[in-house]
Length: 309
Image 1 (cartoon, rainbow, N blue to C red):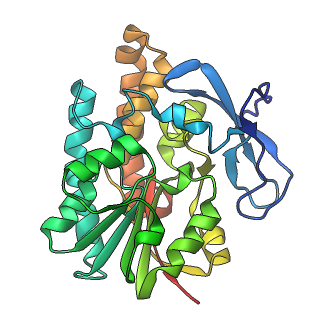
Image 2 (cartoon, rainbow, N blue to C red):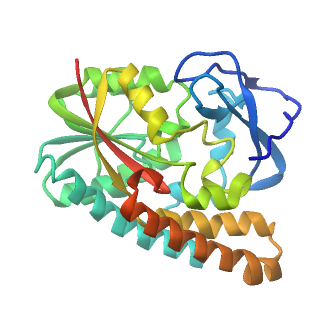
């Protein structure tokens, strides 16, 4: 991989230590652009001690909110605006059913808390199946949309009463500044024999290696951390969790590759159609085929873990 020089720091940035091992050492990994403003770039660094990749410098927790206030940011959209949004929303319906079926292999029903529930579509799927659902969403706009669906959206985790049988973080952990603090808090409200389910992108996937710094799941500066199965294992073990299974999100390579192609083409339509689109289809096909045989190389991985306290 080509190592990039650090960009100049600007206001409202902080320089964190490694989330996994607390090392202050770091090496340049990639310089990646904000996909909604490609003139703005951020630096990814790699810890030489444990190989964890993360954003540094990064916007502070108080400053990062503005980077989510983008109309094109699909996870928080209530309505489809274009063909890509329609595709995203239809895939999300399938994904939510797949997530429910995956969970029900471990527990048939009970209390489920979705941390970072966004606009609440996953909780609606769980409601239909008879689960008692709770959500937490720190972004007001998305939380209000979820409440308008009639969902029980907590204003604080302190408002949660009773043990959670399942706690989910679907593409959420990579966004959280105080990741250790949140996991510790969630662990305290888990019922005995409960499961913690975390889905995050995997930069060791085939599509990530093909698109390199243009891989959409680097998503700077919204994504603060970039896990692999090895670093996720280290992180969860340090929090007294044990991974019991891995699952694949099968649509993610297609979605990630198509959006990565758009970033790579830099909005040049001819280049997108002729070069990058073909590249994305090949990358997604190979990534999905590879994930059938080597789950740990999936574009996105679901980690199913239990507390070992």
